[in-house]
Amino acid sequence: MLRFSKFFILMCLLVIYKTLIFAQDISACQSNISDPVISPEAIKWPDNRNKQQLDKNFWLTMNEISKKQPDNIIWVDVRSGIKEQNSGLNMLTIPLNQISEARFLMDKNVILVGSGFDQIPINQTINYLRKKGFKRIFALTGGIYAWDNQQKSVSLHQQEISPEDFLSGGKTIHWQIISIGLNTEQLSVLPEQPVKQFALTQNTISELNQFIQNNFTNKNAFIHYVLIGTDEQTIKSLQQQIKLNNSANIVWLRSGIIAYQHYVQQQINLINHTGKSLSRPCRLTI
Image (cartoon, rainbow, N blue to C red; front, side, top):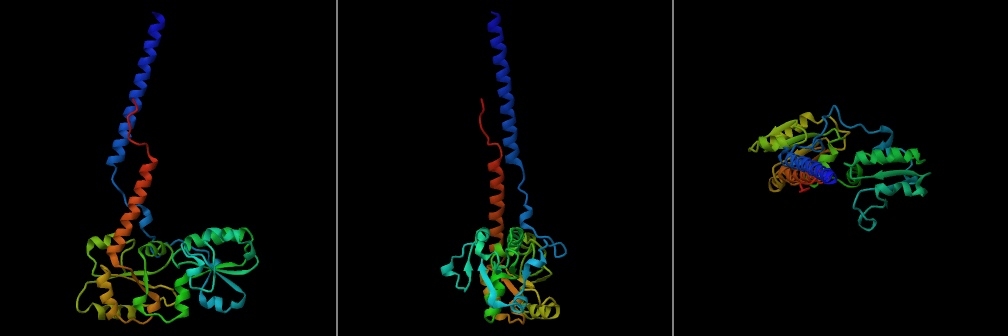
């Protein structure tokens, strides 16, 4: 009888323990479901006074490189997804995460060429490589964007950046946004508020030209303004009408705010999904 009583007590304690675990699981599950979706900091920029700092000793402009000895420089295309046979450039093609394995570059003058908007990972890579003995490795300010502008004349309608480049580039690049025809909801999605907002009217083109002519001060920046319209059709129409000086320093956000909203939502969904996959799943434990 005594043995049975001990067994009974143990069983009761086990049931109580299981019940507590079940209640905790339900609570965690409900918490996951009811927690509001918060826009992650990954889709915001620091303002122009607080951009992420790059090591100035790692970066060279095309003008600075031309003053050195171009014949002794090895150019390396480190853009992701680029293969040597389709890069179209007279460069080596080595993924950024494989540069450290290219030991033959250790004592050479090396210039890394990225997209122009991937400055943070390139800066981190150069810092790592310098510590490993690559003493003469640098990166091209503006990346392939600056390279292309040096090789050929530029017209404004050709200069477009993707939503991904826009979001990543703004974390380090001191550019400014100009919006055209965006409503309040669309403006709220931007990672930084525009320096100037234009409505779509008959005077938009002349007003935009006048504003840029009067305010274009940072001619040394490889991009000074990012123009953002509503959608691809509107942007194409504006591009046909707008003729701006210094067009190499001005870009459009490809396909406008509609494409950017879609991209941002994808990133939020990805981050939220990743967070949920790491949390305790809703399950029955008894």
